[in-house]
Image (cartoon, rainbow, N blue to C red):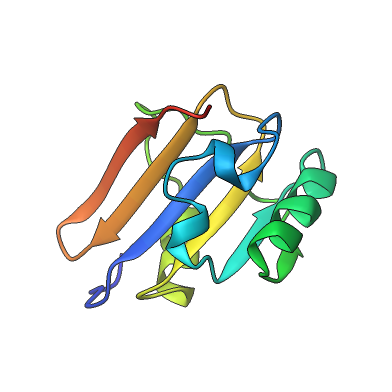
Length: 113
C-alpha cells in the first residue's frame, strides 16, 4: 500500500440495487468512475449513466463482505483514484463503503433502500 495523502472512497454496490438513489450517499459522492465485473456490467452501465460517470469492465473485482480482507485490486484502484469516489458493481450481499487513507482501510455496510 502506498502512502495515500488524499483519501479514496469505494462504494461496493450489489448488482441487484435498482438505482443510485438506493445507496445512501452515492449520488452525492460525485463518482469518478463505475467499475463492473462480467456479471454486473449491465447494471454498472446503467448506474454510470445515472451518475454521469464513465464505466469500465474489470475481471479482477472482488466479492467483498464487511469482514473480508482487502484485496490488492482495491489498493490499486484507490491509488488511481486518490481524492475521488468510485463505485464497484459486483455480486455482493450488501452495499459497502470502503474508505482508504493514510491509516489504511475502513469498511462499513450501508443499508441500500
